[in-house]
Length: 142
Ligand code: 5GP
Image 1: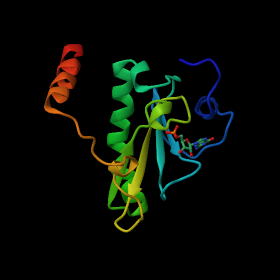
Image 2: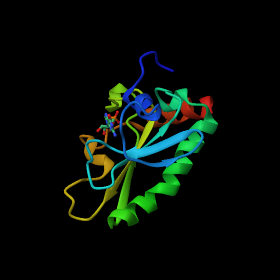
Image 3: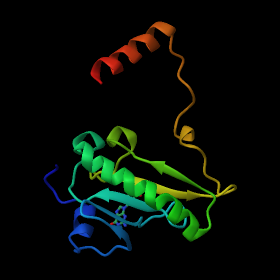
Image 4: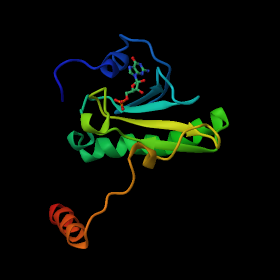
């Protein structure tokens, strides 16, 4: 939990206006102020956990349950055909507001956007041994 109040904390506290579309005891969802598409919605934890790893599992589950509930609702509300669900988890991943949030961005064919893969140069070439090491490093930690 970070020290300075984030813009999302101010929205949650009612100190900044937002178009709130859904609220639970632990989460809030509101329209993004700079929508990438009509209906672009942010689902946030009410507590200002900075990153996914900082949130208790039950809070992360609450956030993703709301994403599951809202994605089709938002899609239908704006007449979209799909949704990009994304978390910029950490500054290195492009996170600008250090307060856990999931982007729900309605998509339509021909909207000019791309898949999440478009955020990268392309696949990295990793030798089999490195892939084995990575898989082992992950399984050892879970
Ligand atoms: P990030 O880059 O941290 O994943 O995304 C932060 C998002 O928060 C951006 O899409 C940005 O438009 C949105 N945002 C930043 N400030 C405000 C605000 O004051 N109100 C709302 N509704 N959205 C905001």
